[in-house]
Structures are given as structure tokens and as C-alpha cells.
Image 1 (cartoon, rainbow, N blue to C red):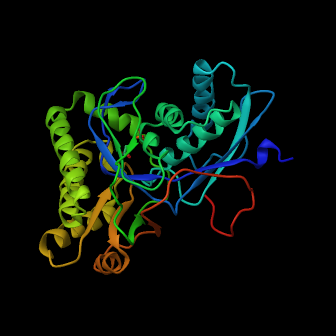
Image 2 (spheres, rainbow, N blue to C red):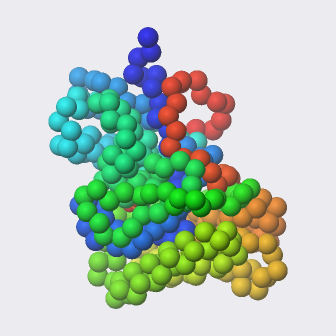
Length: 334
Ligand code: PMV
């Protein structure tokens, strides 16, 4: 019989095209505006959880935040406060992409962790996993759904979760090129970025703009009108970048190289409308994401002067997936 250490739960990061940035409720992680994302299925985080004599974590977390272990143990306690039948557990994880540099590592991690922890007490409903994952990292609620556009509505209550846009297809043969300009873990966690919106003078207009773009993007997706979608994402990227740049601490997410790339991408986007649809976005981190068909994205990237320290690619597909074997493929692990 397999032991629980052989059970792995895997989730992928999701890339928000309309960003969740700012909360209605910081304790419950309820978003201030609607958000929309695609899955990056070639990137994954795998988590194993087993019953133990006390809560713990095995393995090196030095690539993560300084308080990573503490946060995981707090998360176990939080889950136990809702599900007292959860026994003491320990776990371990690995990923095939670097954490904390703008590839939504916490979304993948908390989606996989929630699935794994709840599985110990035989809870497997995606809506419960998505709700618990949200408490670890808001955007993780969008990483629980397989293979589709995932939306998450503003406000809500304790049960708020991401959901799949029914009858909507992902663009075929699209890739995300994640241009990593700084491989080190970001110094400012996104929870501080969310807090920044509480007092922001543009809070109301941000909510209005993001919600409007969300609806426009949903319409474009329903019509598979990728050109319009790309324009909406471009507009969102400009606003999001502006919000980060306008803040003394958030500005540090980007270095001279990534800023140069962003400025060049903006120029290319606005001056070369004849190129096939492509777009670009950033998260809270130094990575710049360029999306579209492979040849189109390669062409765009070849025009950039600043060179990333690493370029990671994922198809736009896939999502949470449960696997049962520990046999690891031969690849770089972070
Ligand atoms: O889930 P959090 O608290 O790490 O926030 C994620 C925020 C962004 O990645 C910047 C945007 C998003 O919607 O994923």
C-alpha cells in the first residue's frame, strides 16, 4: 500500500490579465475588484502532506519569504480552526519555476497545499479547496480550476471563490513567455501591495476601471476576439504598472532592465498594430509576461534590448491536477 508521503497534489500558477489588487476584507481575502486569469499549465508546484506527531515542514524554504515556514504553520492552524478533525500534519513541496519573482508562485502553492491538506480529511470538493486556498493567498482560488478562463468576483462573503467561464475557450496555441529580470524573491509581499490600495486616492477609479475591463474582456473572450482582448489587457497593464510605479516601495518590484522591457513593449504594442494579437502583463514581481502565439511572441521578444536572466515558457492551458507518483521528471527544480 502507498503511504501518504507518496501522494502528491499539483497545481499551476494562474496569470491574471485583469488584476486582483486591493481587498474589501484583508482577513478573508475578499477582492476589491473583479479579476480574470489564464492557467500556466507547464509550470507546477507539487505538495505532499502526511499525518505527523506535530505540524511541520520538511525541506529548504530559503528560496521563499523569511517567514515562509511560519506562514505554512499558521495556515495549518487556520484550516484546523474550520476543520477540527484535521490531525497534525507535515509536508514538503517542489516547483519547476522560481518563487516570488512574479509568476504567481503563491497561487500554485496554496492551491496544491489546500488540496493536499483537505485530502487528509477526505474533503475533495473543488469549491471547498478553492475557498480554503483563497485564505492562504487570494489569487490561489483561481488556480483550483482546470483548463479554462477563471474569474473571481469582487466583495462576496466567506464562500467567495474563483470560477470557470463556461463555454469559453482559451486561445489555441498561445504561450506565456515569462521574462524573469530578477530571480531573487521579491522583498515586498503582495499583501502589502493590497493594503496600499486601502488609502489610495485612485481606489474608486481603479475599482471602476478593473470591473469595466473585466466585463469587456469577458465579452471579447465569448467572441474569441483576441485582438480586442489584447488591447484591454494592454490598458490594464498600463494602469497596474502606473500604480506600482507611483508608490515608493512597489516601484522596487522592477529594475532598470524590466522597466526598459516594459517601455519597449508599450512602444511596440502601440506602433505595430499589424502584428498578430499578442499582449503583455506583469504581476507583483520583476517578471514581464508576453503572451500570444509562439512565433509572434518570439518576434516581439527579439526586438527587446534588455535581456532577462531567465526566460520560462508555458502553454496557456491546464490547472489543478492530482498525481499519485513521486517519480520526478528530469528537470530543474526550484
Ligand atoms: O494572491 P495574492 O495576495 O498573492 O495577490 C496576487 C496579486 C497579483 O498577482 C498581482 C494579481 C492577481 O490577480 O493575481
